Image (cartoon, rainbow, N blue to C red):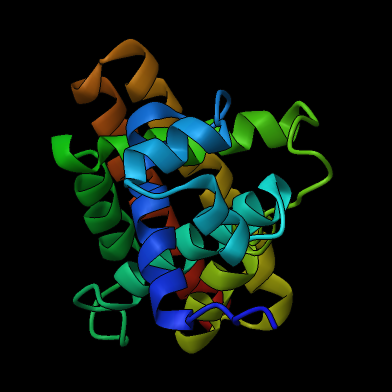
Length: 194
């Protein structure tokens, strides 16, 4: 009789896989080198994940869980700070040198998903991000009809600005644009919440 996978060990394994992918990238992922890096056999991976597609799906869910948990832990998420302030804090955190590998991994996932190269996977990391930020806006009194629209605008602009700074290295110019976006978000939230 096959043993069932231990959820705590699986979560620990997923955290290590996220870190591995942040370091090496997703597009060249292969089970054997991954297992070797983890000091495990491919059999251990197949014990926890039926196939590479399930491993990728679970890894993206774990990356999303980690990212959302971090966002919820930000000072001010509870409503004591403006959404623009949270946008600025997120920007500073994600662009710290030690956090760039995760930011780059997220953008790689976005690119692969946009190119249809994730074997039909639509990661929650991408698909639900507007709904996640919309919940923050609703908590600040923004009506549902406006929350999703504003969230979509903010997420798309933020992603574009982050790609700009990662590809050009022009931090000062892009920081100015990010601060203007954060100011606009606060104006939109104030106007919509009236």
